[in-house]
Length: 279
Ligand code: C2E
Ligand code: CA
Ligand code: CA
Ligand code: CA
Image (tube, rainbow, N blue to C red; front, top):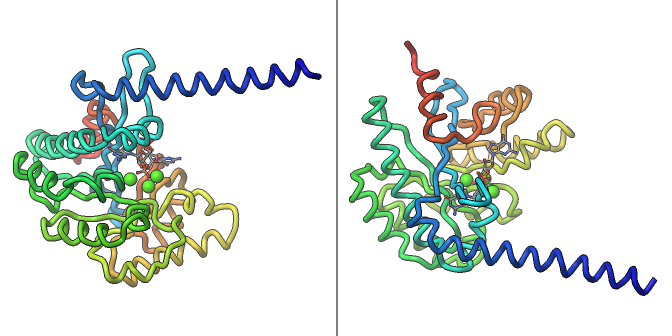
């Protein structure tokens, strides 16, 4: 029995060591991932539910690691937030999204807005407003073509700073979306006082939809709340026809999810756009 206990401890410390090793590797690698051009953006189409066409793209970061392959953001963004790498990465994301808007305009002749995710750390501590203004100017992209997606976590951490940043960003002319909306169980009354353009309902609500009528009612309530505040409402994580139809008939404005398209590499996006375009 004593031995078994010992083995358990060893197994645990072994996996912990492995985790720490991975974490160190990620932390170390992040230091030069940018210079070595290992980071890339995938783009997931957002669909105008009434008309069925693309209304925008969401930029989603990936790390093409030389040894580990494609690393999803959940595995390195939290580390980047702790180490401060998030500031350089965030600027790169915005700059790359702006260049993509220009490239799409040149290639296909129309302007597709892009939504980028902004970490609460960037939102509250960095010189986000100056950075956004500078990058938009450098890249010559009209501000209304960029949506910044931020979660309510930023507001919980520092409400005064959250408000200030929001107002300054609005003055710049960029759009603001509240990402993962609904999971904060917050006092939603604050929404009417903020210059927020869009509510992005968390995919958990969409994915629970088929399990009970209550879940459907919660989703409806979130959509109606958004509509009554005159916000654009986006639902993410739409994976099937049932979810699509429910949201369409509930008055949701924009849909995003595997049902329409998964996040696409540059090449896959070009293919997608070719298929979309009327001949
Ligand atoms: P998010 O902003 O809530 O993004 C939605 C996530 O859901 C994405 O995961 C997307 O690939 C995934 N998704 C899209 N459609 C579906 C669907 O139909 N079903 C399911 N189950 N999932 C779907 P991803 O790309 O792994 O990103 C995870 C999170 O990482 C994002 O959540 C966002 O919080 C963060 N993130 C991604 N890119 C960036 C970035 O450039 N900067 C920052 N700060 N965070 C980022
Ligand atoms: Ca997002
Ligand atoms: Ca989300
Ligand atoms: Ca999320």
